[in-house]
Image (cartoon, rainbow, N blue to C red; front, side):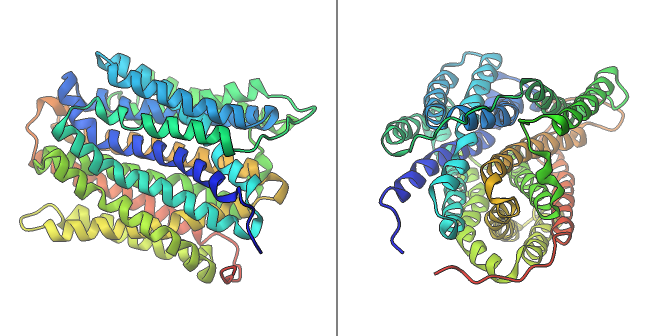
Length: 471
């Protein structure tokens, strides 16, 4: 069966959006140590450059998902490319950390406009029997963006300065805008539907408070008024959101989808899978630059091993997933990630450990690559056919929220472990190298726990017969 002529150009535009989002996120992970030094701030402060983007992306994603579903996707998708490009320019012009965080938040809003539409556009444009391959290509584009980011960021930091790590994405954003005008099809408005603003505000408040609690756990004492209020607020807003959405005719999030055990397991896998990826990128960036004293370019090339192997393994993961099924593939791939994280924590930072460290990073990327694409496809497939667009938006939300959890939890764990027993000196005032490597090693155990949770959740899926790849 011949594919429509416009099929792959549409997927290509979606891949540009996926590429620049991940390129930006991974470049910033490598640049955090440089930004920390450039602005003279602590790890607890500089990590907000990464978290502000991810948090804005996650908080606005479900709102934009519904707005675009109601009003049509193309204008908002193009607006996402425009806002992302403009805010990238502004990030490079930032004169202090506070303004950089503000512009990163705007960039996250632009990324959210892209993310709210990317998978939905693919789902609406690609026939079902080709959709798994299209999602595989889309996931590979994300992985390529993550892969190119560290090496490109290292080169830019060594030859130019930190501002160029934001400006590099501008040409891609403008290209996506122009091509999107030409090839992305317009979608009809949803007649009679409305946006649930109350539910949207409750969800945004819940997401922000959850991430704030995770991020500040190393700064606020667990029993401090700020932390208690933050946790209580997250619980209250989440409860109100669930109660409201169950009665809402046009909900922001279709909670009925989570009644499917397979869909719920898939969302947990997406969330913690990206928490694994971004937690690892955060920890290894500091370990390589401040712990092992690698230059930015050398660190970037080493760090790129994880997403590069992940991108190469993504198409293979689709084929293997069709043969093994999501249960066995999830358990097997997460076993690989668990072993790799434990190896990094136990043997990869001692004398003569370069080869074990690189092998462990490659294994980690292999495990994630085998898991992420087929899990995303199986998650969307677990939803009813008429809710595939909503399911795709939730997968994107889980991906970004997971990235935020990864950075927040890894940075909090590392910062907490870097504090002296009985003291409270921040990382910036302490000697690095061995102290920091010890903190990274301890934090890697958290990633191993994430891998175990994903593997156990995958085993909770219903048994299903493996399928053969479509011809």
